[in-house]
Image (cartoon, rainbow, N blue to C red):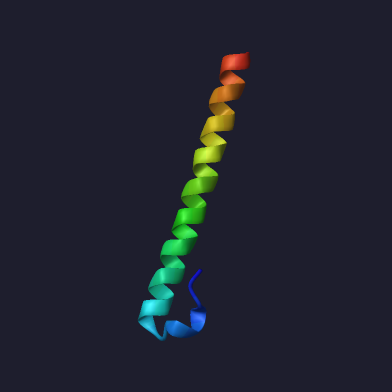
Length: 42
C-alpha cells in the first residue's frame, strides 16, 4: 500500500487519476459481466 504523503504535486494527481480510472474500468467490467449473464438467462 502506498502512502499519499510520498506524492507531491503532479505525480500525486496523476496516480490518483490512474487509481480512479482503474476503479471505473473494474465497475464497467462487472456491469458487462452482469449484463451478459442476464442475456444468457433470458
